Length: 321
Image 1 (cartoon, rainbow, N blue to C red):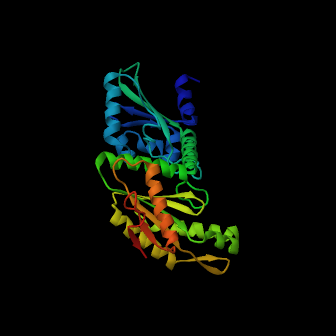
Image 2: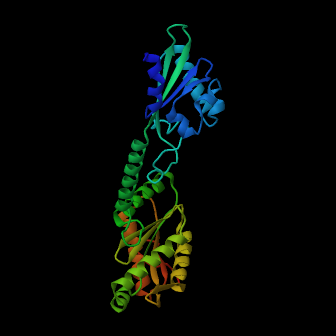
Image 3: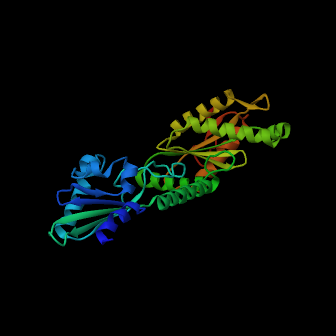
């Protein structure tokens, strides 16, 4: 059998796509790999424009690529990392990828007919979905690890180390741009008694629900973290002390009015809050100390309230009930 007679059966059985174009970017041949996935008959598309048959191709970009291959007579390549796909073809792994389409490595090769000198382009389409899916899974794993490294396992808010790191960044930003910044510390009142009465599961239920409630009342730019045990911290960027006290009052009232469902019971919880505003030159430790002193004052004065720290000698110049 002559070589020409073997070529088409060979191309049709390849587990890669083959698209042959003439110099006017009209289709000369597509193999079965392409035809099956694009639901086309090879004989029906012969002589038609590539962009007519495959109307969802990135036309402007691909035309530039193909014209470059023709004029310079050098190959071009597009990897799935640069562009996930050129031909919008379904892949066979719908449950393992967040995309319905095959990731592709595409090679564009210049060809010249030996007998006529006519120029052609052969586009080879390699299915790279396995590599794409692997990268997705790797990225998802990294994202989960990063999330685990910065969140509290029980409540889902930021953990102490990440929260304190963010406080340091916000202090630098407030210092540099002279923007307001405030800090709240709060904890659950009489939490030990609640734990003793309802057990650790009851205590955990209250911590989880209070964290969820508080997070829902904050802005996207605010940073809620679990500082330790039943104590939480909130960083309020672009917020002065007056605004922070308004936030504290809103949180205090919302928690007191809320009920936590636990084992067919409705548990009550309240919080006490210490509030302070950043002034130039303060470190994160000093700011936390101020908020902690104000929190202690709120506890001492009866709990279920917010107290503001205003200067180094006065712990509760402003109190909100």
